[in-house]
Length: 86
Length: 119
Length: 164
Image (cartoon, rainbow over all chains, first blue to last red; front, side, top):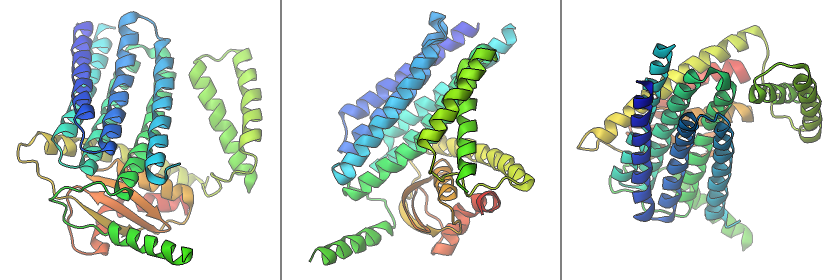
């Protein structure tokens, strides 16, 4: 029962990543792309946590921590670059 | 213990619904600033709830899940603030329904001061 | 008072280490204590980020109260966003407004602006001394006092006790 609900949740997360990918390719400006990328990475963090449940390996949570850290740094660096050109 | 697993799975499902609402807002909203608002807010609570559900199911990794939740709660508003400031600074086009912009005068004043100093 | 910041950051590092390991054996505790004291001494020897934090019982009580108020606002803001996104007419009325804060300390201002970003319909765009510029998705009110009352006051009364 719990597994079926979690599979539905994983499907909804995949759908939200696909929708943000649509905004990523059809963006009005450069900042739009970065926002879409940010939402995509935040959704992938919870997807990685879900995959760690299905694969039965709780070590994948560490991957989610590092992924969140790196995506935060990337977004900050891109925003800094757009504002003051490094 | 089955009932606890089902409660955790339902919380995760609620979180994924919020993530979906965030990306629908990303598509429907008219300009960058409103997209940042809906995208980052809904995705923050969505990720928080889905991680909380996984943490209820596996109680032995609750420490790492808690760290990840606190980390997302701190970093997500910072990155959305930086993106909004950069977007306003490089002059991204605002939506037609925007009613008031008090920040523009402030930035123009700052630019004028800078040019005076360089002259 | 640099020593207070140093002690608080060392304790924070140690708590993070224990949460990452999730067990309380002796070697984990000893190695974590040594590493967190070393890292705290190297990186936070002269930083003063926690100096303004007050540690009397009243401030700690307000800290817990603030966390509950913040979580309530976060949930409310998400239902607000959901209502706006789902409704077919897209009810938005956005604009940039200017508000003032009474807080003096830098850490207090940072926490205030981050809380404003996560509450219903507001997004901090620029912070300059005591002036905050906010992108508001549904502008109400005419002048700066009304905007300040609507956005800042609900957090400021708690943060004033915590940070002064």
